Image (cartoon, rainbow, N blue to C red; front, side, top):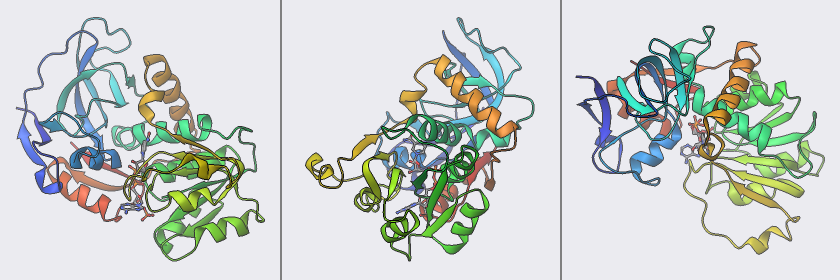
Length: 327
Ligand SMILES: NC(=O)c1ccc[n+]([C@@H]2O[C@H](COP(=O)([O-])OP(=O)(O)OC[C@H]3O[C@@H](n4cnc5c(N)ncnc54)[C@H](OP(=O)(O)O)[C@@H]3O)[C@@H](O)[C@H]2O)c1
């Protein structure tokens, strides 16, 4: 029987169990994929704790790469034997084999290996839609400064490199001097250790007092309000995560005196709602990775049976770049 990491109750990493599962046969619009690697993402923590609820029992994991083993009726873009990868709902990538909707699964170019794919699909598609589609009203022009929190993480290191390729000045924040070095080595123009420094003051100093046009904030509760103070008038607060906890309710009226700010809460799953959109975004990601402009750093590898330890390390802010489960 294939094995998978499941939870039967929301809670801590200790709830994650390695179990035998029957993957079954693909139905209409589905495929069965045999994973060679699977990705770790912070959303897996939200789903494990129940912050983002799902039906139980739940096999965790939203990102994977492997070989297509069986194809259901109506699936035209994949064939048995194809190398493939995905970022996708529903969860289930912490598994050796799974059946899943084909809509968000794309063929993997030969130049991209399975571990790289498992380390980049969800994070890279996120960096793509943030930097290219989540833009302030005036758009972003080469030379513009943007603020990107958790810049040494999985999404962060991809964003540092991609922003540089787009000609942007990415100001990254990270929780230690070593993480700041990593962000700088991957294309951040500036890095701020927000565990020690006042990032609002630093951003103001770097931008000559004006502030940035957009803040990409996945840290949530701990940074939200101060992020608003880093924006120039009409700037955009792009909230896309809650690593420190969800942003508490706030009064929209506070956005006026801070400079008529815009605010959005984005999720990848709106952007990849169709197969066509998924393919277009994936092609853009594959191009930037194949060209070498964005390198996928896999800094941690765990066997699937150590998934709970991987969660502990992620939550303890011990990881950098991407983390994959080798299968
Ligand atoms: N909405 C979307 O479409 C979408 C898609 C993908 C990811 N995301 C979000 O983007 C963020 C990055 O995802 P990722 O998978 O690449 O994770 P990651 O950045 O590799 O890990 C999260 C990082 O957040 C920082 N952090 C700040 N406060 C924290 C706290 N109290 N506890 C734990 N970490 C804290 C840590 O970096 P420092 O130590 O440097 O602070 C940590 O390494 C997550 O918030 C995730 O939910 C959103």
